[in-house]
Length: 128
Image (tube, rainbow, N blue to C red; front, side):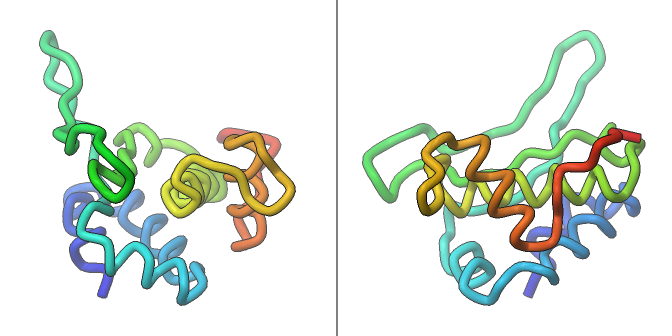
């Protein structure tokens, strides 16, 4: 079920492992939301030295149009597993909430942190 989300990370096993750990911890409703939406995808940030970064996304459009893409940087694999999983869960929370609030939490960043924590991925005190 997760192969399309994991495939872009085949050459970065630590990041792929963290991605799988987060995906398997998500509630069924969240997984269904992602799997059933053709706009949702997970991508690796592509860096070309001297040129910059490239990630192709659908352009924004009316509600229900455009991308719901989580883009992860390869250097996240150099961080602790706890931190990497937190970042992935936080970004998935943004995608699930469509960058909005959650319950009484109106700030998008606080909402993503709270939802990620409810999935078992609290913001760690250390990035390493």
